Length: 282
Image (cartoon, rainbow, N blue to C red; front, side, top):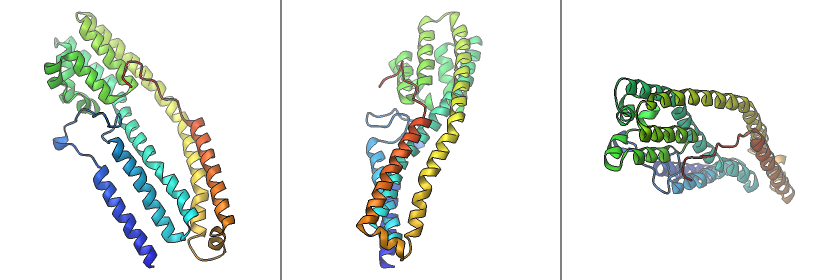
C-alpha cells in the first residue's frame, strides 16, 4: 500500500506540474504571432511539447508499476502513452486548421460581398476580424494593425505563416495577387477562389471519412492485448511471477517490438500524406 500511495502521489504531482507548465493562455484572448520555437499551428513551444511527452511517460510508468510491481510490464504502456501527446497536439492542430479551412468559403464570400458593395479589399479583409466566420476572426485579429504599420502584403504573409496551412497558403496568395492587381478583376478572382476552395474541402472530407475506420481498428487491436496484460499482472499469482522472470521480460520485449512495428505499419497504411505547402514557408 505504501508503494501504491507513493506512486500515485508522485504521478499526481508530475501531472499538476505538467498541466501548469504546458498550458498556454493569451491575455484578453488576443492572438499573438507564432514565435520561432513554437509548433506551427499551435500555441505550444517545442520545450513544452517534450515536457508533456516525458511527463506522460513517467506518470503512466508509476501508475502501472504501482499495480503490477513489474518494470517491463510498466515500460510498454509508458512508451505507448509517451506517443499520445504527439497524437493529441496533431489532432488539436488538425482541428484548428480544419476549422479555418471550412471557414474560408464563407469568409471569401463575405469578402466578395464587401468588395461588391464598394469596400476596398484591405478594408474587407480587416472586417473579417469583426464580422467574418469565427475561426477567421481569430486569425485576422491583428490584420488592421499589421497592414497599417507593415503593409497589406506583409500582414497577409504574417497571417499565412501563423496559420501554416496549405489551403490558407493558396487563399492568401490569391488575396495578395488580387490586392496587387486591383481593379474590376478582384470580384471575379474572389468568386473563383471561393468555388475552388469549396470543391477542395469536399474532396478532403471524403478522404478523411474513408480513412477513419482503418485508424480506429488499428488502435483498438494494438491497445487491447496490453490492457489484458496489465489486468492479469495486477494481482499476485502465476502471471506476475512469470513476467518477473527473464523469460517473461523477453516475452514482453518481443511483444512490444512486434506491436510497435504493427501499429507503425497500420498507421502508415491508413494515413494520408500531408499536403505540401507550396506557397508557405518551411
